[in-house]
Image (cartoon, rainbow, N blue to C red; front, side, top):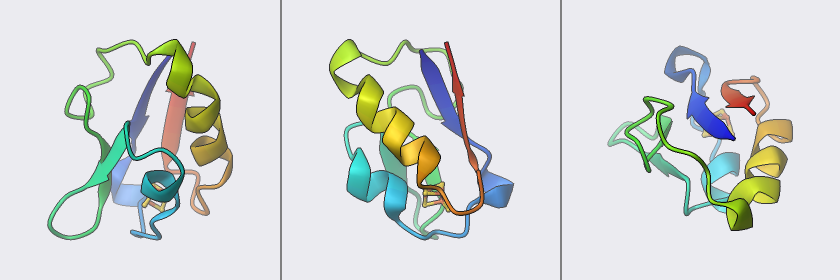
Length: 69
Ligand code: F3S
């Protein structure tokens, strides 16, 4: 599983970082990104975080989070 944030669609609501701070962080403007690979979708998500990543994906109000198997 890999993930990234489509940053143009992020409204800085904060849900993803609140749900899974080990994967999602914010830049200085509050726009989220996947910090384990600088939002480049190159790193596999560790198994222990996968359910949280899916929770973040489901709870993003603008569907800005992408998750791929
Ligand atoms: Fe942005 Fe969605 Fe996270 S709006 S802060 S990517 S939950």
